[in-house]
Image 1: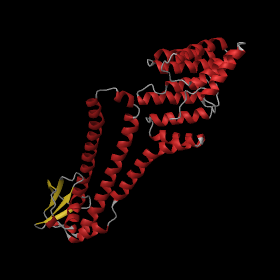
Image 2: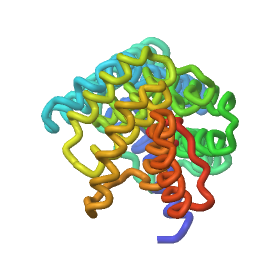
Image 3: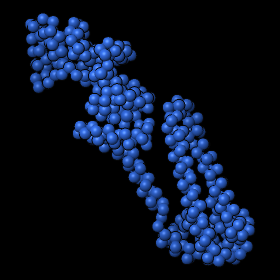
Image 4: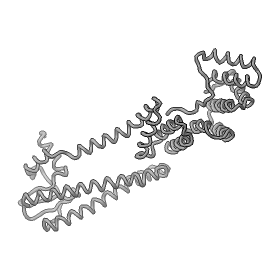
Length: 358
């Protein structure tokens, strides 16, 4: 098959092939491409030109209606009930997410095709329904040459889809880059725009939460971390939530949050890390005795060779602070020395390390 033959095959399958003539009859294409309408005469060129223009209008109307239906289905059904869909059995989800739009699409085709048939009957004449089965030998050269010179709407649609795809993929990376460069206001604005169109993106909720945290919008940050948990069907951001809460909730409420988180944690090394964070928070709030007891317990575990996830140098440093404020200057000096020996270049802080940049 040569290139010209291949192009003709494409022409037959395209929306630009709207008619063919056989045995001095003209067969027009329907909006449903399988439908054809045969006229007992060969329609004149002027009439065919008019029919083509009307056909384009109907196909444009069809594409516009279908696009609106899909957008409405996504934003009025899929996104609002996303969590409910994800909790259903897989085959039910597939049925709901495919069957409903397919039925709506088919009904739309039927309605618009009926309107087009009405136009043909009123302004072109009586026709006989048949299958629309164009063949290369029926192609009129003038129609084919016009097709070759006509700009392809499909190219523009493809470019638009590519732009949408790259926006979907690259925008979270851009937000991440802005957060990396501490441009949190810009990252927040970009995340707001992205979530307007993609309100189920768990990773972007986490990125926006991180930006809000750094902008001291603590309550809003917690809400976004909770949404990130919800839409990722996980509890991955529980520690971040408690970490943010240490900046604005009353002391007792934060301790309760820590206790709940520690009780839920099953992995002991990570449980010890959470305990070290709780003790650091107590130390920051001058609850020296309770903080000291926890740090002492954790250091004993570390010295016995127990697997832990906390930073030993940081825990030694924090126990030194607790000891100093409890009047044990000798013990404090020993702990400061041990901490410095473990990490000579470290700069320690009592701020939580639980908030991880996503």
